[in-house]
Length: 473
Ligand code: NAD
Image 1 (tube, rainbow, N blue to C red):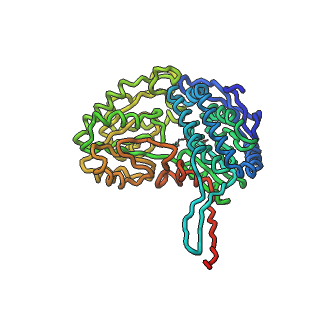
Image 2: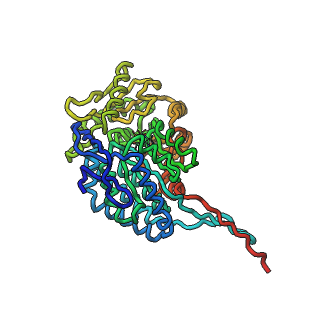
Image 3: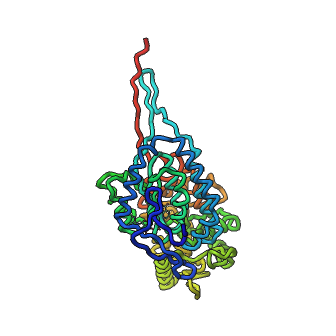
């Protein structure tokens, strides 16, 4: 299989598509590959194949665990090849791309090893009630482009472990690595268990509206999430929606600036700021504000920005032209408002979607850069004098994905974290997802959770087996 001109994966086979489209390298703005752009009809064939594969796949748990363990091994064996593809189409530095493949392998290994047993939820002299998990059927898995391989694995591993079959629809911005992973892993599964078909809205609609799809697991923007939710409504599909966010970091007066600056920088500029779990606005106590701005500016100025394929690069380009346009629009608005830009603020004068890491202060809460999800390498820093006021401002958004509190006294800061209206409130860390802890958004940032046993349960129907015991003689 030519990685740069892949076929669809339907029913365990490489299927030549009826149409293709270009993939652009964000580091030079040139097309470097073509991908099979699935039609609604091809999506339909994949769902049929996944439906046929479901009955026998759902019955053999030992086989499923073995298959997931093999996926972890195959991903690690192919890590350099897959990382090269992620780096090329998505832009991140190749070392970070390799880390993403290792992360995907970690999820497969975790779900291969997770013990899942029926849970006795009630026991009395005359009654024993046990909760079992039954697989749902065909799952539609729709990841975003920012971590294409990790997000795909985060859905595949629990969905398959629970006994479902899957049709994955990768983003048209990152189809190449997703298809390479699909074809790589297909040999571990019976035909039809894993199907991969990249495409855009029409393919997405065909998948989420299909009557035989029982569950949708979606990661992407809140706008598309709403549409997907509505598509699933007529047939009451189960949904897990991991959506947009505008994560706040709150730095308390007692924080040690030298100790927290690097962690905050990395959390804000991870993946060029294109992470659902990036710090997207930072509220800093007035007593440490200027020192932290200075420390973050110094780190930003030392970062090597360049093509992800250069091993020296620490931050790659923004992933696609649409996302670059959005970041430039927010930067223009920030400048019009007279906010202070300490470093960065411009696109680099070279081909590729490069913007230097940008630190902004003296900006109002209602500025677009603060109020909206920027999804790019631009961090607005705001000042506060009262922690309760910082919490109120952090919560003043329709989003509710994550937030973090930075402090020298984690115990005293716990009530501050607990007052944040978010799915995950971190203390002295941010963006710290694991396969074994639940992750999901509050408010318009999502529905349900991924990861751990909690995530696995979302790919299953709970079934109560409730037994009346014979009266003792
Ligand atoms: P997006 O909503 O544009 O696209 C997400 C996916 O949906 C893509 O695969 C896309 O092709 C597909 N899609 C588009 N139209 C569709 C339709 N009509 N039906 C079904 N699928 C359709 O989002 P994006 O730009 O790829 O990703 C960025 C967004 O994702 C940000 O808002 C970010 O915060 C969010 N995100 C959230 C999480 C999380 O875990 N909460 C993780 C990563 C990214």
